[in-house]
Length: 392
Image 1 (cartoon, rainbow, N blue to C red):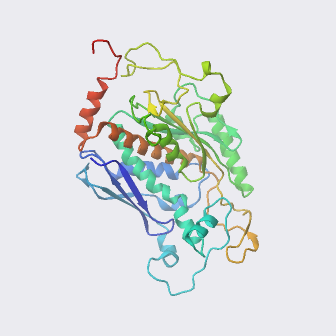
Image 2: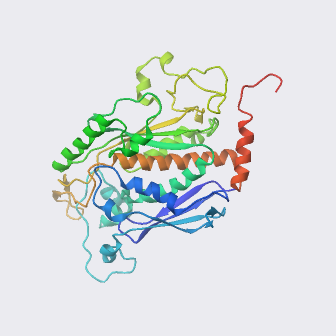
Image 3: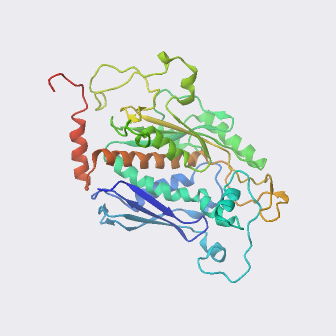
């Protein structure tokens, strides 16, 4: 079978976002309602803009699924932009005969300047429409499809907010309470920290400012042996880091203990391997999980833990000083309706990217043109991952 891959297309204020996903095995149960659940979660979170109330994202399955099951052929998805009618003339595909109002007020922190220079544009609208985080709705749809596959193998992916601005939640002992996370307006399980984060967002909004923060993704049930140490581009930790770093405004990624491990001696940085024994269906386990479920670029059976650092949104209602693309004169940056804080939503997007990478790695390891074939390969492999005896 081909490797799992996807492409997205579409602009922030265009007609729709489109997606093609190739490489899924046949026979995977999949519905639009299942995908919509994650699309709604992406639109939530305290600090989002009014657009998230307008859109009500919905995925239309156009191809690759019949009677609720994938066919093994490419899956095609469509997510319509509800704001299209208001932007029809500005974003129409056909040649426009009227006068075009160009965006020339460059925004620090966005792709406006670099995109205009790279592609030779005299209108930053051509850049910001595709560089917009609206594109992540398409990625979340792909991630939901991949989540559906991972569920068939007992793999679950969740996220929670660790920090927003100066407010940091106290560390959890073990796996976070995911129900409490989803009940929080900022997707933080700690009630006191959640309340303080909401207040910090309110203060930033009043000041015409924005806030960033840190989110954390957990993937549990991942079998030992996904990824590889033999080449740099096959290392699973590197692939996860690249995927999470590709999310808009992410400026840092950590696996497991991350940078904190640099401040302790080796005796406190590594995870002791415990004697073999079945534990939650796994023959091997560790006393700790400082490695974040990955060693040598390979999953080790422990939960995979990835953190992302999200910078504050670059579009401010009280715009920063900048320059004009045409005249180079000093002006205030362009302002387009924007969020105050997207850390809760970024966690959901990061879940999607982790799901995509894990689904790719799982299919690389176990193959199969149908779900049943992939499951047979998976179950056969699991019978081989116990202790190695001399006579085996």
